Amino acid sequence: MNATELKELSIEELSRKAAEMRENLFNLKIRHKAGSLSSSADLGKTKRDLARVNTVLTQKQIAAKATAPAKA
Image 1: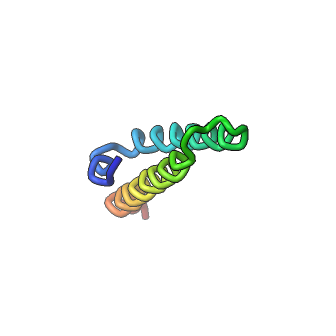
Image 2 (image 1 turned 90 degrees about the vertical axis):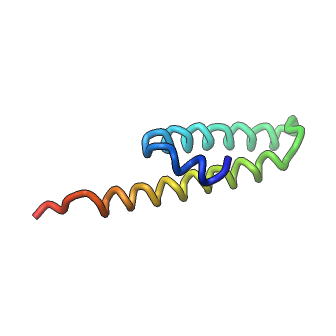
């Protein structure tokens, strides 16, 4: 998944995707420790994808706060 696809998603969708990816990463780590993971490259790929999602999510949250009217 690339950043341009992620930028089209809403904050809620990105949050859900990040939670799913964290769960998937946890399962991959368990399988890796148990020795049943066929490709350890999946761990790195999932970590990078999760980092991309978190980066875009943070950017959108900062932009949302900047455009929100300030309460005085």
